[in-house]
Image (cartoon, rainbow, N blue to C red):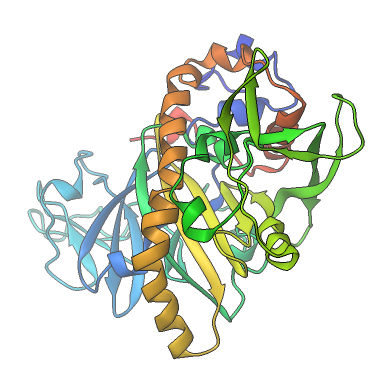
Length: 398
């Protein structure tokens, strides 16, 4: 790593198989990230955002969203201190009148110095933007980098024509890596034992499992996203040939805590167990048939600063008519957002922020004591080390 790495070189040397991941406090460059919902970027309004530590401004002009860095190249002040947009396609710095094109970033005028020879020769950084499925995606990358298609940075089937989504964004006081690892931590189901989602959906929820773990399959499609997905349950070291859900927890031989085991028909029980998980670069997790059979939940852990990220929770369903989409809208806002994104995932947010107190110290990543059930996290770290297209470092920051 370069001398300006966030993490001490001596610490990085101890994790050679995932050092790039440990270095990526602010995420990976040269990737697409969702940053806002389309509904949150109205026509002709300037919207502030922060991504990978970089302050960004968004503006929708004639239906298309543009993104520029929130920093004038002249004296380095932020445009957002006092927004001035005298024409639809430009933004002017309030300090000296340096004016830039939203689409190209080109310096087109200096109000306080008309005809200045620097005009047309300099530009402010702009970012590629794509909108898909109600989200605004921004690409933070190196100059001259060949921008990949969006489908390389989202899970398979996310962009399918009949997939319809609703979602919400939460600010989380934890590093993005804590967020994505929480999502597919196979033992963290324990924290959800009292979630209102469980009785609401009549879903059985164990405290954990006995005698086995779910293997992870690495996905390295050369013309697609890179990630891991859940494989088959395999025998663990605790003995026994079958993985069994654990509904009663013991301490010193005494029953002390209970999971939820719903009694339903074999068919309904099979549906509620038919979940599958996957995680793809740069920072998205998906769980299928959750929170309802036939649906899926996406969780982006988008890097903002070293110790904050956006939790972008998205619920998806295949809809084939306006009537089905309207019905799902109603279900999302009146049922799934309160009981799933809030009643269930707020417990995840609490866990992420608690874990940040430990993992916020770089050397503590070497102090964790992982078990066999945590190998999915290690596989994820190694995959990111291998396939990330770049690391955000201090030289890129404001």
